[in-house]
Amino acid sequence: MVNQPRHVLLTGAAGRIGTCLRELLPDYGYRLRCFDRLPVPGAPDAITADLRDAEALAAALDGVDAVIHLAGIPGEAPFADILAANIEGSYRLYDAARAAGVRRIVNASSNHAVGFTERPADGSAVPVDTPPRPDTYYGLSKCFGEDLASLYADRHGIETVSLRIGSFATEPRSIRMLATWLSPGDCARLVHAALTGPVAGHAVVYGISANTRAWWDLASARALGYHPLDDAEDFAAELIAKLGELPADDPEFRYLGGRFTQTGR
Ligand code: 15L
Image 1 (spheres, rainbow, N blue to C red):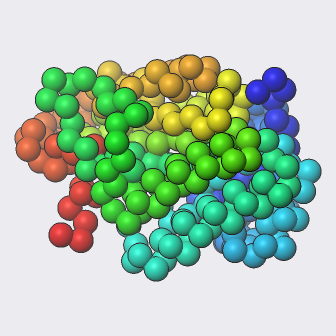
Image 2: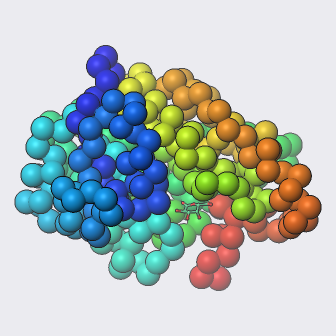
Image 3: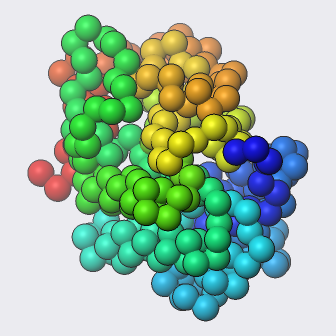
C-alpha cells in the first residue's frame, strides 16, 4: 500500500486482541473506529452492533480506509453459533466493505485453520501454503474467512491479509505456547505490517513472535515488513521447570492445533 491508512474500523474491539490494538495502534498513527456486539470499555463512541446489522455496519464503514476484522467467536462453539457469528458475520463485513470502497482488510484467521496438520517430524517450519486442515467448526470458519478474503481480492480487488494467529497472550503459559506465542507488542507490529505492507490480492501469514521453537514459517509475514521482537524462549526455563516437557505424542504437541483437535471426539 502506498499510503498508510489512517481511518481504520476495528471489529471485535472489546475482545482480548481488540483491547490490545486499541491501546497500541494509535501510536502508529491510526485513528480507530471501534465496533463490537458488546460495549467497548473506555470507548464511548464505539458502535455497539452485530455485523449482521447492515445499517450499523454501513455507517461504521463510512470514510474508513481499512478494516481490522477480529469479530467472531474465538474458539469452538455449536455450529449454528459459528455459522452466524464467524461465517455470516465475515461475509457481511467483506460485502459491506466492498460497497463502501474499502481498500484493505486485515482478517483475523487462526492456526486452527490448519490445526489437524501434524508437526513435521524433522522440526521444519510449516509453510503458509500447507493445505487447510481445520480442527474444529471454529477452524472451519477461519478456512471460510481465508477463502472469502481470496474471493473479494480476486473479484473486487480488495487487498487483504489473513493472519493465522497462534496464541495471543501477555506471556506464554504452556509448553505449546513456547512455539505458538504472539506477544501484544508483536501483535501490533504484525497488524501494522498487514495494514501497510505490499500485498497482491490475498496474503496469508502466521501470527507469532520470533519464537526460537516456532512451528510456523514467518517468511510471508516478514515480506510485509513484520519484524517481531519477542521470543517465548525467554520464559522457557521457568515454564519447563514448572510444567515439565510434554511427550511428543501428546496431542498438544503432535498437531499444530494442540488440544483443539480433541474437541468433540
Ligand atoms: C485461537 O485461535 C483461539 O482464539 C485462542 O483462544 C487460542 O486457543 C489460540 O488459538 C491457540 O491456538 O492457542
